[in-house]
Amino acid sequence: MLNIVLFGPPGAGKGTQSEKLIAKYGIIHLSTGDIFRANIKGGTELGNLAKSFMDQGKLVPDEVTINMLNAEVEKYESPKGFIFDGFPRTAAQASALDVLLQSKDTEISHMLALEVPEDELRQRLLLRGKDSGRPDDINPEIIQKRIDVYNSKTELVKVYYEKQGKYKGINGVGEIETIFELLCQAIDTNLVMK
Ligand code: AMP
Image 1: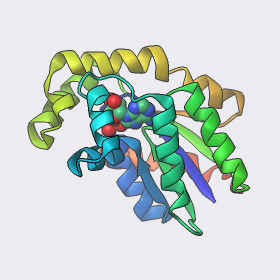
Image 2: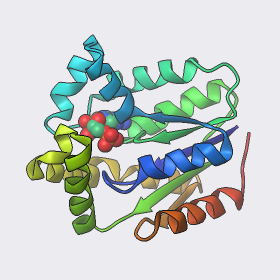
Image 3: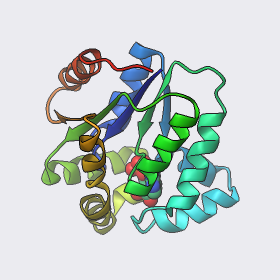
Image 4: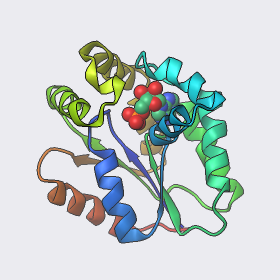
């Protein structure tokens, strides 16, 4: 399987690049943010719980997020692989993902981190909020909170994958197509598939 963690702060372009990667590699896109938003739309219990954290720019608790992600992965019978977008965001989530994949006799192939300066992130998120109507993209204070949460809790996840020799930083500023090529090069070089 080809299992990619597409990593980066909010607004780094993970969703856009995931769409292109799934088309090229035929793997499944699992975005925890998208799954939470679908649950909010559907008015589920999980959605109501997630919303109370998302509206404040906070992370949904690990236990809730990990259980949801595990259940999503279990839905697919013989997948070619997955792109994990917006997950893991904490070290606990990263180690839970390793345990889950080990139970399927596979592992993360690459952790690709899109790097974008904070000023650019703030501009991109405000712009996205105008079109997407995502409540957490409209309010500058919530945007800043999400960037702060990324810096304080999520960035450390890089170290987790660095220790495994799987982390690669990718310049996330520039043309979508150029960034996509950089991602594909990283995937196609040192392709570790299990
Ligand atoms: P995203 O669409 O990835 O920007 O996520 C939107 C929001 O969903 C985040 O600000 C969090 O509140 C929540 N969320 C998404 N993924 C996770 C995760 N892996 N762990 C905790 N909260 C998450």
